[in-house]
Amino acid sequence: NTLWAFATQVRQPDDELVAILTGLAVLRDMTAHDIANTLWALATLGRQPDEALMAGLMERAFAVRQTFNPQDIAQLLWALATFGRQPSEALLAGLTERVVEVCDDFMPQAIANTLWAFASLGQQPSEVLVAGLEARAVAVRGDFKPQEIANTLWAFASLGKQPGDDLVAGLEARALVVRHAFNPPNIANTLWAFVTLGRQPDRALLEGLTDRALVVRHAFSEKDIGNTLWAICFLSILSPVVVCRLVNALELPIAALAAGELDVQLGQQLHQFFVACEVDKGLCTGMPASILALKETLGPACLAAFIGIPLQSSWSKQQVSQTLRGIHLLVEDEVRCPRSGYTIDMWVHGGPVLQQSAEDRRTNGWAVEFDGPMHFMACRAPTGETLIKRHHIQLLGYTLVSVPFWEWDRVCEAGGCEAGGSRELYMRNKLHLSTITRAGSGSIMPSSVVVGSW
Image (cartoon, rainbow, N blue to C red; front, side, top):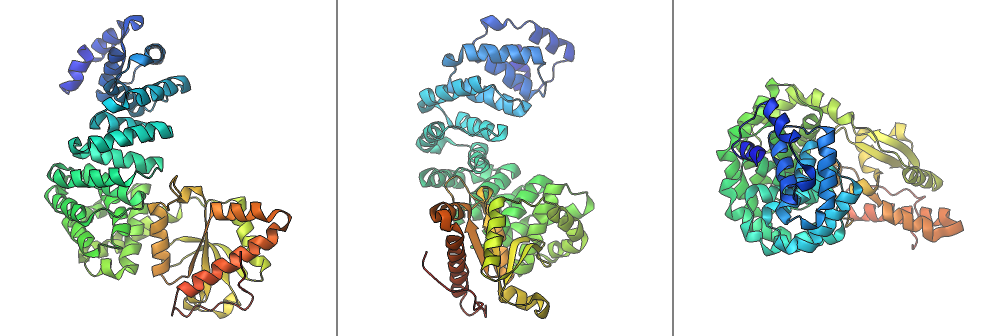
């Protein structure tokens, strides 16, 4: 209780007092509430418990796991995530069972902190736990505060789990009501979560958060700006006017980025924003000149950060490339787009590359992307990152062909001994469909691509 009091008053006790208080802890007599409060207080104060104390608290927590209430569970998991400490498999399983048992008693803060902790720890919660907390969140959606809305959506997005429409609609409606209390991290994390989930937020909410951003613009951190600008790359597809207002609202803190050093993630996010400003006319026309000028200052560093992302290779991707060569097409693997910096998994042509201009190469061939599991949510909907890249690649004039990993696996499994022929037929159809859907683009389908039924 003494540590809890210091933490709630945002006062730092001296090191000697902390050592005395934690040393006096009689672990065998501690309740679930005592354990949760102790760890919450230490985490709030930024004090890492030593290994002996942490081991003792975790052992005692497992022993009394059946007595944890929702707030105790959320505080314990939040503290562990804040410390960066992984709970044991046994303790996590025990707390998961307890969450399922008492999920009808969870309130918004406990829901948000529990999901946030799982996501921050990189632990995938059970489907039963997620379903229970999601149903409870829908029931108490009218009590969510801005940070709880942002943390809940952020957790779903970080876990790669698509929340149900009822929960999204409920949190959107609640966010609109309490939008005047959103701070910059709440705004940025909410927009980042929507886009990562591949969702466009309700227009009224987007406008409301834009208005709020104007009020609190001076408090936006570099991280908030990066997340917001990255989200704009996707939000501009349906709401270019609104997101241009948002950028205008943040013009001063964005322009201030030129005076400092950029971390790698921020550089990558800014690069995609610069690409969006170049290829998305709706976004470019409403952009302040000071923001467009940033590309001249920060562009090279941002491009370097972006192209420094390690390339992901896989046997399945190599199979796709080999299959395309098997139908007598010219294939270049891992081609860097000179305008955007994006890497295209396979650039496929039907004629000699040296005889084609850059424009011909975009319009007379295919940009083939093998999309592995990391490109999709658990429900197999594309992630926001994937959708942004697809959007930009298409705006750049390429004929995009996406090969989802589960489709490719199904073709290979169904083909058996004849898998090679099945793969070729699948890819012929993919290339054909992508060409005919790009009506009037001037794309040429090589004569070697013969359409069949698969």
